[in-house]
Amino acid sequence: MHLQFTGMGTAYYPQLGSNSAFFSIENHLYMIDCGESTFKSMVELGVLEKYDHITVFVTHVHFDHIGSLGTMITYCRNVLHKTVTVLSQDTIIQQMLSLAGINIDRYVFIQEPVHTEPNGLRITATPARHVDAIPCYGYLLEYKQDRTYFSGDTAVIPTDILNEFHSGKIQQMYVDCSTDRIGGRTHLSLEALCSMIPDEERSRVTCMHLGGPFQQAVLDSGFCLPDCIHS
Ligand SMILES: [Zn+2]
Ligand SMILES: [Zn+2]
Image (cartoon, rainbow, N blue to C red; front, side, top):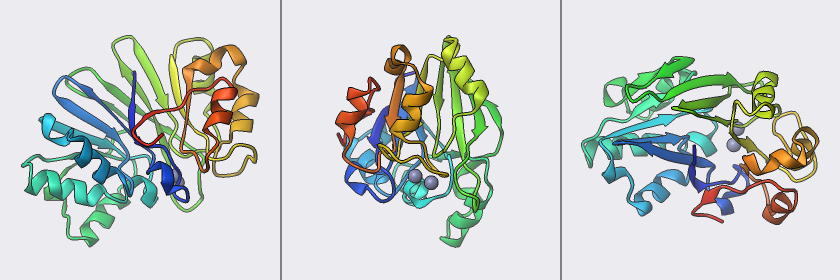
């Protein structure tokens, strides 16, 4: 599944925009996360008007991933007369929105680890390892024969996901690549990805959530960069 990105940066590297992706099936727009710069980018692209249904999959509640979600929900509701669906494994997002005056009757909330849409899209939440304070999830997206993994912010790729990628059952992965060299407890790095993905499989891996201007190093390593309006 080909994802388009409105941003591919980390919280502290806003030059690349907040890491957020979108794709569509029929008349339904799907977004993964809605960070600080995402709403502005979506409005500038003019895509919110085009679809009858809009669903946002949330990986976690750091503001580089949900910073403009509240504004997008109310804009879609009040201006476009569309009700946004939010799929999240963490119900605290309801409290955060409620504190900003956006009550549950303003949007549809789904908390299901495995969710199947009427069009056949299946979304499976996969726990990530990010920070201790809040949970974070990646998502496996399955549609027809296509299986695509989106990591969210994470220091590891789950072993079953990695095995399915190596065997070809998962065709593409979009993975956290916050730093070029130094690995860490909270994010993956280019160095870590090089150690776990053989050369011949790197063309099926897109490095996202970059924390600096090391796009050329990503490409030189054989990985892909997101199809992104911030490049
Ligand atoms: Zn982040
Ligand atoms: Zn985060």
